[in-house]
Image (cartoon, rainbow, N blue to C red; front, side, top):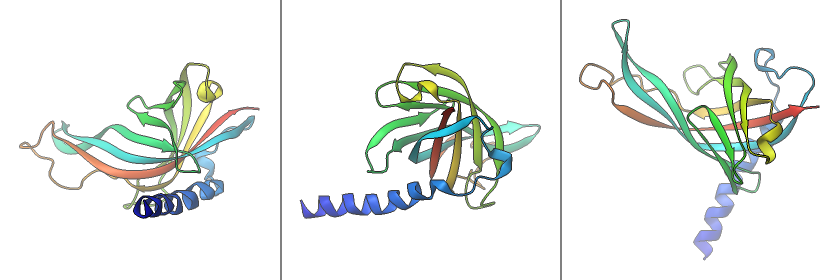
Length: 171
């Protein structure tokens, strides 16, 4: 019981600073257009899935999809993030987005920060009015730098990552 409690405290001590830092300055290139306000911030922890592919005679790791859980400020799972890209709230509402802006905050150490415009909604829950999403405070998640060649074509690799997602809705 003591170990379980210590694990929960450790988990929250890791999650809360990241969520609290969601108020960081958003670079202009990924700022949400005026007329929208933040409605929810979630911390994501999971993996970026890459596949070894051949394009133009060059082998490289290509992003396939995220596979992550979304957490609230108390460390409770509130949803998931997966291929599409799709963000799904625990009661079933979900949004699909398209990337409209990128900012490389930590070149060589973490995946880019993003501006995502919502292009599809499903359900009537918390995500039903979402119009934009920012991905910020990214950690890790970059594609592998080696191991993609003719012997590994089609192979997948999962790379751990974390990030904060800010969900916006119209004013």
